[in-house]
Length: 144
Image (cartoon, rainbow, N blue to C red; front, side, top):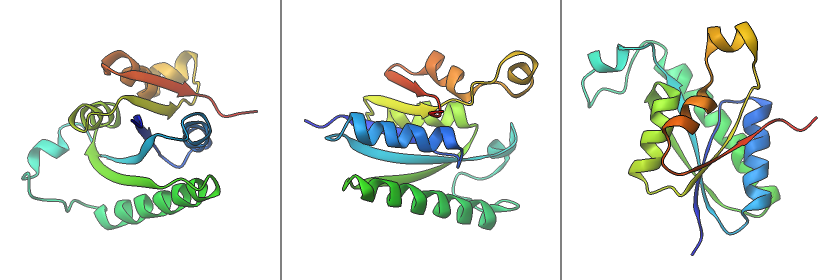
């Protein structure tokens, strides 16, 4: 039975490296590429559950489609189909929630590898996912 694998993408070289890693290391996996449209904290709660429009939503959706097109091109070089999904909210929370809701067995994601003050200011989505996720999380750094 193929492993259900989630690969979050944000357009970074690290996310691209994570997708390539998942395709190379788990050729039999069912891979879903997830993009989370980041909304300011608390913003999602003011939108009705059925609302998908917010200021800049069209641009954000177009960006997601561009990311998915690039991911599909990468997957095609491995002759591997992928599924895609979009969520909205806080990336670390949405990645874990999506994985749980969809019975994902592993998450493969990139890390920017920030350290020191940069990490304190921006936080680490990968670190938060590793702490919260009840499934295996593989963190990939961009190959030098």
